[in-house]
Length: 271
Image (cartoon, rainbow, N blue to C red; front, side):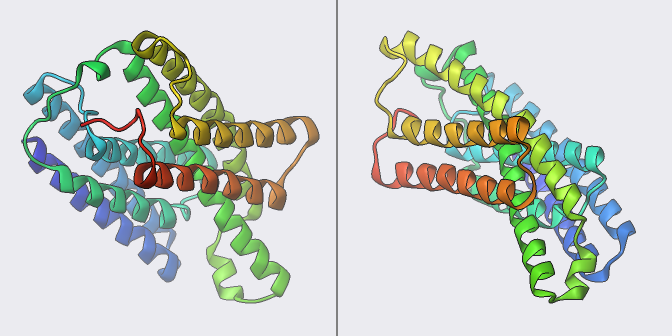
């Protein structure tokens, strides 16, 4: 049942993705509205898939990299819908929905039998670490996407080009607001996730610092986000500077995750 629900959710995510893309080129707000409802329907079915898997395996669904990708897709879609309601900006779905579909397609490679949960992954601290960190990273991913769209639109305005494309994009103020909200929510959640991870490491390895390369890079990205939030709240940074900073920070985080998985041994790799 969980596999059927997962595939149904993936299909609905794909329909929603096509809806968002169509709304951009057709310039129809109603199409984007329907795409949002489609994304919500996909999210509900995806939630049921998680529930069905938990009932079938009697354990957390976050037991391997594929499940983690699926969970990140779920969180990214949920956080985006909240932001969409708060900011009334639907066009960012043009970037978010394809990202969710890609994550789900990658996660689909791990569909199959249940995976035994390693003892090291059992406990409330590790669950809190994963959930808080993933939600925080999803918020910060939206900050990065909003930053990319902001810089694109800012460049078009400066060059006085592609006026038709400009009409399809949201006001720069809306994108800057998403940047602000994403930092306000994402940085504290990521901070709590890092703290929970440190406490968990203490119980497992006897140290808060297990010498994990992924932790080093994550802390570097965390410091960059903290600096951005400080500059925004204390010095009033807005607009282009914040967009560039957001892209830099998410680039460091993504590059670190990719490099760690490919070239380094990590305590975050199980199995």
